[in-house]
Length: 115
Length: 109
Image (cartoon, rainbow over all chains, first blue to last red; front, side, top):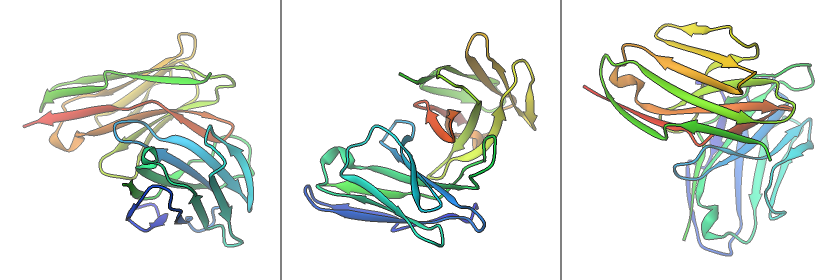
């Protein structure tokens, strides 16, 4: 177990609604990355937050937005939900700000179903 | 466009078999390649490879990277039912991970 927690575990929404997913990073980590994993696919990078600032974004529309708080926990917000947003949303925490790759530790994910 | 491709997409073997999973990539500014095992939800880290030709080993699992031909393989010897999972390959680029679609391995008793 990595110490990265996510809530809720499961969520069911309808098209057009808005959703907020939460992630608590591992102690001592200052970077959170969010990924979307559709069924049968690998995770796709959404964006990354480092010390409360967005630090890179993947190919996702602006209705996907995020926040990172002073304690380095993070939220992913999705507006105007579409059926294709149904997926497992993973967050990963790491210690950024150093040279080289810093291992990302994944949380258990939030399974979002959009009806 | 950056791309990571895994093959096969799925594989069914029997306990005791040896399997080889493949990962090829086309990623600019490559820094490292990582392998993860995903059983239910959270991917768990297996290996990180940065140098060509140096094999990483952990028990029955091993992996090697070829930076000239832009691919990596993950070998699992003497497979067990507990090895059943999705194996993900990812390339690290600027602190972000670019994943392949995964190989679903099923080990039958």
